[in-house]
Structures are given as structure tokens and as C-alpha cells.
Length: 93
Image (cartoon, rainbow, N blue to C red; front, side, top):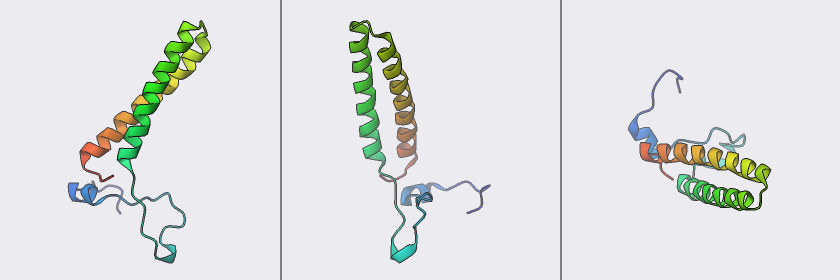
């Protein structure tokens, strides 16, 4: 695909092949597609658990634990937002 060409909505609705699989195309295997719904569930669970853990660490006066879990929660929240964006754009999964 030409890097300067924008993808169409139909291409997103069909799904985008996974270009990260070094064995893609060998043995007749179909390209993999992303499981966006699973990623939404996992990122949501990570946000909830990290926030709960951070609150627990604050209650125990362990600021280092709250900071670490807070950073992980923010990263998970950004990931969640990106995956929801991809899902709303029309990609299957």
C-alpha cells in the first residue's frame, strides 16, 4: 500500500491485516486481525485495578506504590482511548 494514500472506511470495516507477524502468508494462514473488544475489556480492568491499588497504597502511606500504579493507570487510560477510537472508526474486533 502506498504510504501517502489514506485508507477508506470500507478497508477499516473489512479489517486491517496484522503486518507484525513475520510468518504471515506461510502455509496458507490468513492474516490476523486485532481483537479490539478484548483490548477494551483488558484496558478497562487495568485502569480500575490500578486506581484501586493506588488508593490502597495512599491509605497505607506508601506514596511510591501510588505513583507507580497511577502512571500505569494513565498509560492504560491512553491505550483505552486509542482502542475505542479505532473501534469507533469501524475496525472489526
